[in-house]
Length: 119
View 1 (cartoon, one colour):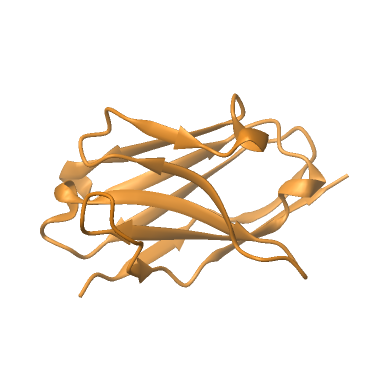
View 2 (tube, rainbow, N blue to C red):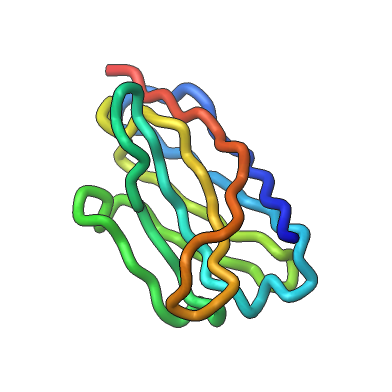
């Protein structure tokens, strides 16, 4: 069982930045692919970014490329999402998730953290 706890959400003006953190309980965190997702009001949850176990490979949804950066510190069992140049369309609940198996599904999810971007 893996427990994930997100933090760092809040209210920010358009053009501003936030850094989200996700702390994992698993001793084998360094083996897992980690991802960030978000869900806006009235919309389905969508993929935002993912990072391989080593941090050497990253993936981004097109709308956040060049603005968001995913990273991880395996020694701290933590994954981050640096979000720059935020706009109101980025308003959503942001979730981190863990895929224990390479190429597998995201089996574990955090409770989410709210990000609100005002215009």
